[in-house]
Image (cartoon, rainbow, N blue to C red; front, side, top):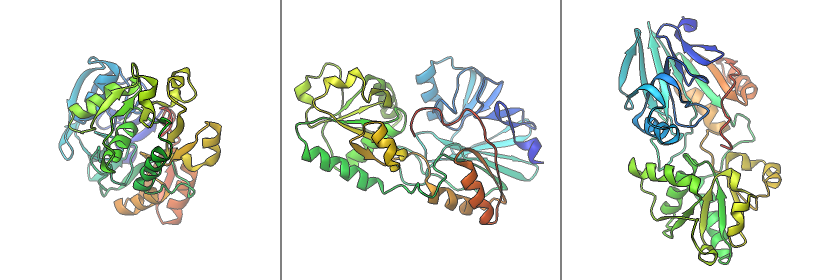
Length: 334
C-alpha cells in the first residue's frame, strides 16, 4: 500500500495514486510544497499546492510565473488529487511552513518537511498529526544537539550590545525565517531600536510584514553613516561574514545564529565572536519526542543525521528506515 501512496524516487517523494510529488527536487507536473526554502521549493513545476504564505514567498523569490498554476490551501483544509486526500498542517519551521498529510484507502502518511517544536512568534506552531507512517527530517538528529532556550540566546546578544556600545553587532542568518524570527524575538525582549538590514534581507522582511508579521523599525545599512551603526544590530546573510561589505561597520561583533553553533569548532572556523544557538529545526529531544507524539508505526527519515535517528527510533519500538534523499538541506546554514 505505502509504495502506491508515497515512495522515494530520484525526484523526491512520489504519490503514484495521485500522480504528484511532495517537495520534488526537479520540475514536475504536480507538486505539493511544504515551505519556501529553496531546497524544498523550486520553480518550474506545472502546478503547485501550498499555503498562501509559501506561494507568496515563492513568488517573491522566483517571480510571479514560478509555476504553471498555483493553489493555496489553508491549514486543515483538504483537497482530493486523483482520489488521494491531501491537507496541510502547521510545521512551525517558517511562515507558511506545513506538513503534508496524505491519505488513501485507510492509510495516512505525514510528510513533515522541515519543522521545529518550540514557539516562534512569526509562524504557526507545529501540530502533531497521528498517522501510519511519519516521514521526518533529521538535520539535528544527534544527541549532542539540544538547543537552549531562545530567550537566553537573545539575552546574551543584548548583554553584548550593552557591553560594547561602540561596536556594531553583525548577526548572520537565513534571509527567510531565521532573520524575521530574530527580529521578532528581539522585539519581545523589549528591544525597540531600529534594526539595520543587508539588502538581501529587505524584501522578505517586507513580505513578512505584508503577510501580517510585525517587525518594528527596520533600516537599510546602505547609506547609513558608519558612526550611526555603532551600538546597533545588523542582520545579513551568511555570505556577508568576512566579506568586503562588512567593512563599512564599526568594529563589528561577528554573530552567527544557527543550530550548528552548538559545535564550537564551526564557530571558530567561521571567525564567529558571539555564537547564537538559534535553530529553525527540531533538536534531538524534539525529533524523538515528535515520533512518540504522532504515534506512527513506521518512521522514514529523509535527510540529515539519518542513521542516529533511525537507530533511536528502532530502540523505541518503531519500524524505521533512512531514505537518504538527495537535494535537501542545501540552502545555507539552518
